[in-house]
Length: 291
Image (cartoon, rainbow, N blue to C red; front, side, top):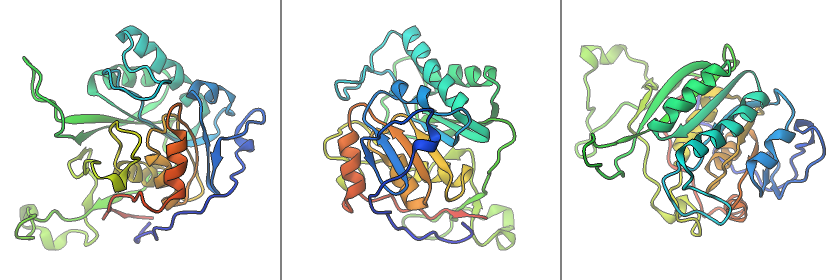
């Protein structure tokens, strides 16, 4: 953005998603920018046209026994879970445009397998992004788990890669700068430091103003989806999220002026309510995006 983009939520309307599908399909909810389908993603993904999507962001259930709605099984036998994920990942690769980006958010133990699978599918590995999460419990006989994994692959050379800079880190107590950057502070870019592949600044989503009151499962911070969208798309591009959850990806798309297509099997009505309301806000984001 080379600037701070204006945060303006686009009002509900009618997004024409027909050009992206092989045959007519009616969404459950739409805005001027996006369309949401209240169903299993595998009832929608196969109907999308080949090479029609600029960026895919997927945050599937992690298969750790969490309770979602009636449509979600988060306690499959491990081999069954892996094959289920490969089924929808194949579709995501198929619908991705040349130069498009695919981001997969999951536990490291799963993303090791899925990263290898995406490589076998012909995608190019870009990054393993580690997101520091200190909400997990220690596991007997293992190191204390403190990060989730965000895989970043592209279909060939990325069509869009926008450099993101993060603010200079300040001490929360004295508000002084934490690092001296080897004595080269004065030579640094005034807009901040280059975004690293280890993200330690993602806030937990605890407060009701950042998530649906009916969905008790963990929600993503818009800071994650903001970065994914800003990094890999420009305004007007189309983003797909097959696991809508609390609707965080779609909120980021609305504020960042990207088109979107989404599916959510259990909480589509809550997502629609979130997009219709000004009560659920995005997290504060001081990132600077270069044009």
